[in-house]
Length: 399
Image (tube, rainbow, N blue to C red):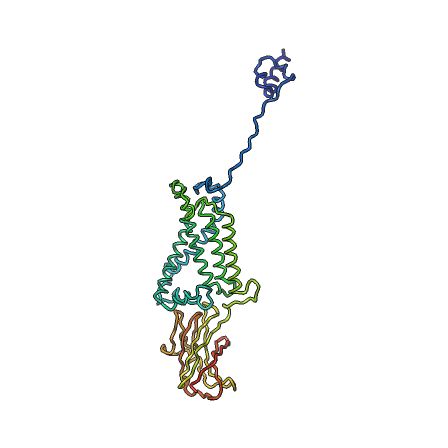
């Protein structure tokens, strides 16, 4: 009896779990299990392949956060937030923290814009035109500031992300071409321009992602998310051709290398930095009836620090003797009518010197009574900076 019970228990627990259902259902036939029990049938293996990603079958809603584009946008989230604040902070500084849009106030942004002029690339004629028309310059500075604020705010919250990324690329290229030659130590403006352009292109490819207003709009209005224009202007799945992404990346790299070489000789040399030492160009220098006139234009040097002229001398280039000298005290107290400025950045007397900011251009008139000129000798005008740097230009005389 005990053996029968053990057999039934073994039949119930072990054997019947491996037997064919038809045999296992027969009661009391547990002793059949070693004889010709067919194996349990296995379901056939099926392999399914995911269809290729095309415009026809690509998901159109950014609500699908696990899609490749959603993951990429999530990875690019720090870039979007930092870039957004970088642009918005320019608006914030000039409006809320300081009134930098007032043409009559110290620190007017138009004067800083003037610093870009001497070595700007491609956009130099546009900068010069604005500087020659102060009213248009002020309107442009206001428009540029508002544009930076809108682009920055929209990137921060992720609204119309791809459209704002295109605008950010335009703003970044403008900064790069206009001021990329500035930077005393780390080539600051050039780095800002190229990195902002590259980051904006990344956001153009990825869109805003999960943590954006674009994503919230797409979840609330699925029909809006399915439209192609929403994906291309805001966020969402966008089948960007690989060749287009590569072409855009290479174009940004080309601009990066070209501007690095033109502005700083950073690709194959020689290295140079036009923000280190001041340079003044002298033109139209002439002397007649004891009146010395000349134009000065500062084209290089630190943008936040002026060149201080402490001496203007008329020199006989044949003998090396000074025929007339105007010293620092006289230069530092010139009357307003003696200086005719061309741009917003102004040449002006500074007490013990004549201050020449970066990008400033002016015609200066000096009284040199008592000048002793040798009519048969050539003469030159020599300007001396407080640092000891000198600049020379030929001088026309009335003889």
